[in-house]
Length: 206
Image 1: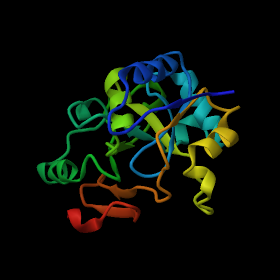
Image 2: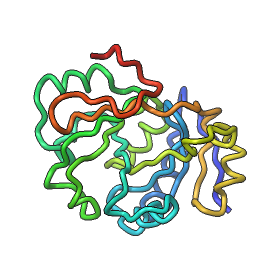
Image 3: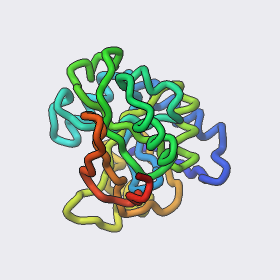
Image 4: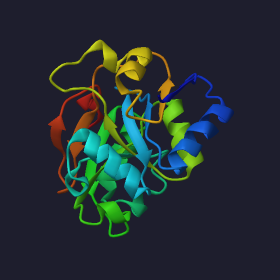
């Protein structure tokens, strides 16, 4: 059964964050809160953990469209090709926030993503998620745990999440009730903004 730990978003306990990071570094899978729905995540550099997530989602790793959860935009060039100033300004304005930006992938992507032409970048407005990636020292790969066809209570209540996912993942964080609306997805991979999915993030950022 997965470990279940309570972390408060207002002031995440560094000892608990360290515990989460240790699980990630050992190749563990975590379920954690974001500013939208709860996410399933692992260390971006751990191929075995990435393969586990791909299996859970029923996709091949090389075809999976996972988001990279980053602490901020400072190491963006490690994962994304150079983007124009206009695009960068939109990112700066929108993040942290409930958006996923699809951007052209860099040549320096981790091994598992070498063939990816694009990557989804997220900087959620949630201190728990941000502190985890900051302490880990690199992004975590993430995918939401909800079923797009049925937004159910188990996707927002940490105890029900534990019940459903406890035998599949290594750690579930109780960060309070989650939202049941996914992020707004905006594709900038071809330069122009294309709205892929309208979610929680307002389109007024343009």
